[in-house]
Amino acid sequence: MGFLEFRLIDLIDILLVAFLLYKTYRMVQGTIALNIFIGMFGFLILWVTIKALKMQLSSSILDNFVNVGVLALIVVFQQEIRRFFLHIGTKYKFTYSEGGKTRNTMVDPIVKACEDMSRSYTGALIVITRKAILQDYIDTGEKMQATPSARLIECLFFKNNPLHDGAIIISHNQIQAAACILPVSQNPNLPTQMGLRHRAAMGITESTDALAIVVSEEKGTISLFDKTNYKTHLTIEQLEEELLKM
Ligand SMILES: Nc1ncnc2c1ncn2[C@@H]1O[C@H](COP(=O)(O)OP(=O)(O)OP(=O)(O)O)[C@@H](O)[C@H]1O
Image 1 (cartoon, helix red, strand yellow):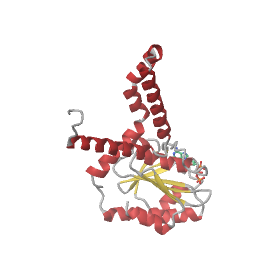
Image 2 (image 1 turned 135 degrees about the vertical axis):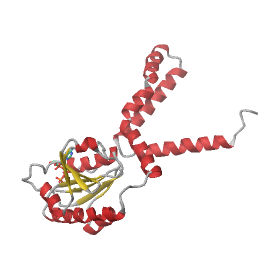
Image 3 (image 1 turned 90 degrees about the vertical axis):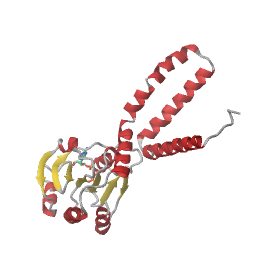
Image 4 (image 1 turned 120 degrees about the horizontal axis):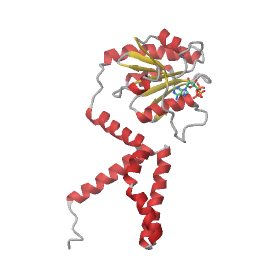
């Protein structure tokens, strides 16, 4: 009788687990973490089988691995866990602190600079922050506090400028730093023609809530990376539209 008892709270429990599993899958989908996830699942099946067959020696060895399993999970999925909490925090708790009016003042120079750099095949990587301040990444570059203008952004990425390598980071309507080094994405599903500049743009969206724009030096194309997704071959109008609704 007790075995068949099914309460409303059990239904909620099952739905919650299903929701969390779905969210976890969406988060690791298309990243190297999915392969690790599958590997761990395989290991778990092996462990359960060995237990069921009562294989003493193998079981005692695998037990030790399983005992540190939670810690190992935290270490291996550090980026994904970080992103998960960041996603919850950004989506459900906070609102963006900058008003629409001030935001627009930096959209115009960025769009104009991208238009010019795309025409002149000047490689560029521009990061725009949301909630996360990205201090760790700002510290890797040359700090500056400058109001963005199209000419300044273009100067920063001009080939002979010693600061042209790496990314500029814009936050609170100021260019905070240039020549910043970003984390490089390991996503195996990115097209092979996307090199390190594009992977660095994807990398920053995987570990923070920032948005990144890439102008390709090779093709002159403009791509936008946001929340681990990307859109490429954007027109200037599309770029502007995306930035305005950011
Ligand atoms: N980790 C990084 N963080 C920031 N910028 C980086 C990083 N790695 C590479 N870059 C930038 O990318 C440039 C190399 O770009 P690469 O040609 O490999 O990329 P790409 O995606 O093919 O871009 P493009 O289409 O412009 O050639 C470097 O000169 C540097 O400016």
